[in-house]
Image (cartoon, rainbow, N blue to C red):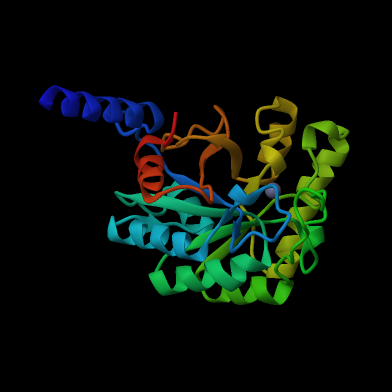
Length: 269
Ligand SMILES: [Zn+2]
């Protein structure tokens, strides 16, 4: 009987270990969390895992605060990179792709209440409109934050911005001069609209992050470029070696997943 129980426990532990990466050593490096939408997915969404519920998002932000992570704004990361400020002993960067209205409705409010901060990569042409690059048959259109919301969040000191291009294209599929325009024009227009300098860029779909001629364009305009590749990037960052990787937070993630992402750079195998 004891053997049976022990055997069962072992099998359960083995199954658990085959799914979650708790046994992996902690990985050094800067954890950069990647979110999209905070809220409840609309009916018909086939990308439900890109939606994190407000309850889970609040738990995750509280976890960061309780574990002593400083959540950095891009301007703070830039000051650290320039040697004007030290990197906190424990730091994380919270990022959101695309610029959804639900970032304003839910994420900003929750970050304000939990004393955490985040950064949103905005698609300039869709400000105040919808996620028009998605096929509505697989991901229904939802509202994007408008300029007044973006400014209000910025003025609160809780949110800063990066660029996510003008129209969310797959950059490597464009002629290089069009890819160049997407990166240059979005920086210029966002800076005019927000009255602040932009230092960060995220590649739509992660496409182009590892295409040397596309990445070279991003590095012309931005100090930081962020990939869609799962992982943590060593700090100090070797800018020539590649973009900064991120930890993709899914709607189905548990708090164990979240903790393992932060410490190991991945939660599941
Ligand atoms: Zn995107």
